[in-house]
Length: 234
Image 1 (cartoon, helix red, strand yellow):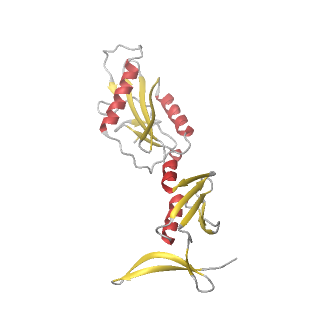
Image 2 (cartoon, rainbow, N blue to C red):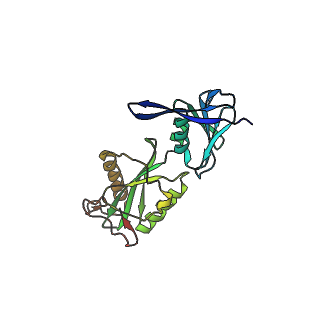
Image 3 (cartoon, rainbow, N blue to C red):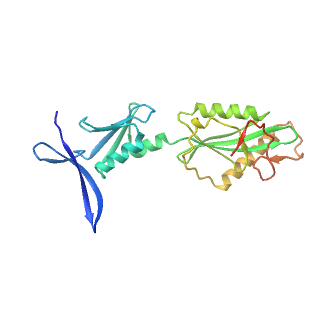
């Protein structure tokens, strides 16, 4: 086993210190890069954030429990231009591929409440990395059915999804532990408008109501569905 001393190399410019890289020094005074061939391999072990970072020769440089972001930050602190490979569940990824792999599925949900039949129609769209996975509509007899349906969909995702609802509506309480609330989601108005129309069309075209009867949209502009107090607003 060989031991090394690890040093920080800094630039000093006009009394300001800027970190450059780290390097290691052998007992013989040889100064070597942390990753000799400029490549780091990050091993992700499970879903608890644990990782270890190795050289291509299998030498463990460091380990931690702060997840991929921490592992990447430590790697670039040691060697800013290092090439990073990620190994997770037996699969190999480039860093960009891995971030795309773990990106959450995004659910966009718009609602339409039918006053005459007291039913709630939901139009949804699932996305990942900006690409549409699927879309659909579902009609519920009451809000409890909607809550149960949504909870089952959230639970079925491989990783906690991000769920976004149309603006100014009542939504069922969902276990927030199972949701990704840190994901930035940009949705244009046209997408929401399209989903609202799909929800309205679903409940209007199923043959169980007078198509000319008055309706109330669940987007909050013209009121909203009469939800049980057990549900919360966002």
